[in-house]
Image (cartoon, rainbow, N blue to C red; front, side):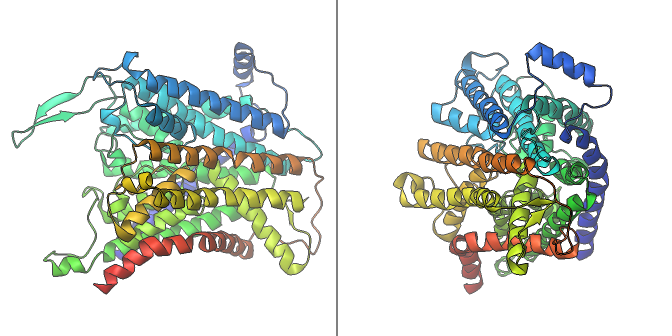
Length: 561
């Protein structure tokens, strides 16, 4: 089993890094705010058609454009979901959603969270899936990358107020990155057996002679951007455990690659954009080491399983509960870490059925801010905030003003970085406390004790950090939970944009200083260790007390029986 685990993880990492490098270089042109070869004419035609100004934006204008764009997205999607019953492509005749579920879902998909308080095959029409949810899968991913590009320019430019043009970035990212990759992946999924149709649901007779309804739909097209955009919301309630979404072991491997390919590629893009490839590779090394450690721990926990199973007459203690036998424990463990290290939230196994320690690692990866690769755009800009904090801590230790990429990191930047880092922990801890103190929150809990608390903590952590996966065991489709999680998703996604853009604007206006003999090198093994230490320190100080009340207590209870 150890050899199989090593081979799986090593193969995955090699293929990921080999594919990420050329994609990262492809995106560099867009990050540098240049037209792609042979596409300048197409871009100008699009700008004229949409009436978009090609002028540069300062950080306030860029932030305003991004927030306005996403606000309109929430309104548009909310309207579709409310009026679903009178819209076309609804062969099952599904009615409109309740106002609180529609609001929760609209915020969820616009914020790149894709938390689902519903079962897709019994709630959503094909029109809502394609025109509503799938469109936002593209646009929310493009939003994250666009904000990251603006931050890149803050580091790369000097003595300017300009950070690019938000509309130009959104169009380029969607047309020249997300659409081509999604098209290729959708064709691959169809070739492997994923369905893509507009047929009514089928009623079939099984081998046991029982009638069963098989849901249909445009699955492959949405599955592609669901993974590539680190969205995570599937057409079916079983998500990527469903054979119509994820039919073979090969599609499972490709879907795992698709989740991390853009976040990994953006590290190479960062190095190219700031003119020092070592910077991007250093961050990529830090992410990769934390990722490999997390995968190893989850695999060990799930393979070791529960010794009480043997006493109950089972053949093995390994934890097979909630896992697809066609994927197995190792692939399920790897998928769980990938989807929570990124802000994806897609699942091919039920995280609620993992062992207490096997489920704690994915939860902690979410709570770290999903900076271990993270979502498209959001993972790297979150990691860069931790990098600034690491530089500041190192500066305190050696008695020098912190610098990063030739820019002095002053008090204003550190205040904004601190605010950024504190936003989601505050949302998680306050949201969990509110849920546990209120009768409406506790009413949604289906399990008592430490595991019930873990389910609540996971749900709020997932919403605030825009992941979207769940421990289940929580009746979330109620006004209380839809509004609480909707508010957490909304603030967790868009509130961090403010300090990010302030930092980008401040750094862009600064002069670049040449490195001096006393400048801390921000590349190499030492700085990789400093980044990892900073991320873990913040995560440990913030969340270990709450984790001690949930999965850690649950594990100790298991050992005590």
